[in-house]
Length: 308
Ligand code: NAP
Image (cartoon, rainbow, N blue to C red; front, side, top):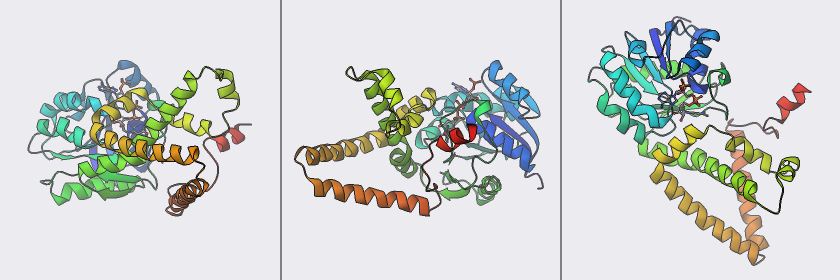
């Protein structure tokens, strides 16, 4: 493939940044990849993995003369990264991010972006519970959605270039306004993680069930929650703090529905339970039909089988 960009700067080289780096390299999407991360430790690891062509702990140095800058840091760090790199951005550069919340990232970054730079907020809906440069892999974004929440003044040409980039990584691209993105993600991603953190925490706090029993008998449902609850604490702390309103709104609805479920169990309302469980089963079927999951009980079990 012809390189789409001369120089791509990756600011943040964890799970997401390093997966992007691997795809850029594999697909030949840039003539040069410059990598920047906060710590020398992670930078050295990125270099050992051969993820880029040049390495620096300075975000400002990394973005010099870059045509595309991709920020992949926890959402709470967006503003400080924007402040560091803003004076060094090349006129006409495209700056994008991968943060899981959008209104907050825009509020943190947009005010610092020079007028002659195209800032296009983005969010690839792809990931795992792992973090760091070793966790990334080529192909992570294949078949997954990437959502842009462009600012109204963004011209069509840089938007089309960034779209072509994500499509080259195998993603399907959609656009929506940032507030809507944050509501949708609150229900499809943020709430499930919060519920998982909560249920695993509850099990951990139980006094009548020992920790060894929780681990030994975890096959029965609990295990599936522990995968989500093993997600990166920094990332999820930031998501909770930076999508507060939408998450609180969804949590309020969730609590109401849970109370109704609790009532149905208490009063033995089997029909009500059966109706809900039938409705939710159909949603699972639709997700499989939409190609967003496969109809096999997995959650790591296949990999476990392969390991044996
Ligand atoms: P990660 O593996 O933990 O990597 C985080 C990267 O950000 C590292 O390079 C780290 O640098 C850097 N960083 C951490 N704190 C920083 C700070 N305060 N200032 C500057 N740099 C900092 O994280 P990730 O999973 O790739 O997530 C990155 C972004 O992608 C997040 O905004 C997340 O919301 C979003 N996202 C994640 C997923 C997912 O499933 N993980 C999916 C979609 C989007 P050092 O190691 O050098 O400290």
